[in-house]
Amino acid sequence: MSPLRMNPVLDRRQMLRGCGMGMGWLALSHLIPTSQANASEDRVAPHFPVKAKYVIHLFANGGPSHVDTFDYKPALDQFDGKTAPTGNLKTERPTGHVMRSPFKFKQHGESGLYVSELFENTARHIDSMAVIHSMHADVPNHEPSLMLMNTGDSQLIRPSVGSWMTYGLGSENHNLPAFVAMSPGGYPIKESENWRAAFLPGKYQGTFIDSSHQRIERLIENITNNRIAPEDQRIALDLLTKLNAEHASQRDDDPRLQARIESFELAYRMQSEAAEAFDVNREPQSVLDAYGPGDQARQTLIARRLIQRGVRYVQLWHGAGQPWDNHDDIETGHRRLANQSDRAIAALLDDLKRLGLFDETLVIWGGEFGRTPTVELPKEGSNQGKKNGRDHNHYGFTMWLAGGGVKGGQTIGATDEIGFKAVENRVHVHDLHATILRLMGYDHKRLTYRYAGRDFRLTDVHGHVCEDVIA
Image: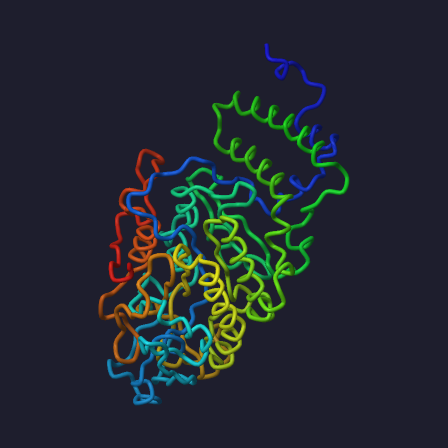
């Protein structure tokens, strides 16, 4: 009989309590979800040449208004204060007359694409962007639209885009998580469902970081351990691994137990590299100045540092606490949020190009849907009785992609003359996901995972690659 099966003096819990295991790798439990672990060497062979090795997803939470940012509609000035030319628009809440954009647009770059004054800095890179004006989703509600954008399913818990990417490509740095989600101030709506691995092995789940903290000890609590030397931690961890392995062998090698074992290993290894990777103060002052002040700027710079170190997928949530969901005061709200992000986005794209990472890093910007070209009428619970905001709009909205195999300096598709509905070369969220996978080197119909007797995929039974995006 194995000595580990004999009545041990210490069980696993006692081992954790009694052997100096209040160490950094264990205290990182808030950082590493219960089923989280780093991607292993296992990966799925790409079906095509890999163009995007990394992804930075800039998620404008709440639904930014496309007609106030990247989708210039001169007709809004023509019909301002009047009924929409198509008649009353069917939206989630009652809306009234057409409302012009309070922001000025102008052409940028050699492509001459229009961008709002809100993103004056980002517009410097317009010739590197494919701007999709014809995005559309299924419903005008945050929760299902967030799930659709992040997991491909608006109702059921499914693996996130980042989980599919790490499942396919694996990890390049085993001292850091392969998939990181950052949101200042805590979880966004739907919380960890936005980056969950679901039925994929737990090691592909995203690791959440509250990026509102500036000191590395708060950003990643207990990242260092002053009570026990690293070599002693290694000895203790090896013993714990043996105990856990024995425990798992008696339970048909439950993948959840394997994920837990790998999470301990990852957390141990993170002690040596995470503190350095997340510490933006190691950057020159000129770089800090380029990104600007604030949580959004700091986490955008962290994203670049993580990509440099081989992290596959970084999702940056912007507006989790004060979202782009401006049912009223859209001029004030959108200007505030754009001021938090515009400078940092431009600096990120500058940095990726300067460091030679742009061509292999896919940068995505957008929200779960857009907003109406008409003013939202006062209604209890949705606004403050004002007539200067816009309602949710899933019928047509804008997202842009840059880097990582993207053909820049172009617009794809179009909404109608006032920007309400996608009418030309319409691109559904499933099509966006199929295109992202294609840039990663995968056929969205062939990147599957068998679960409950069925082969699942990110796009389910939908999706077409938007070939115009690909260079």
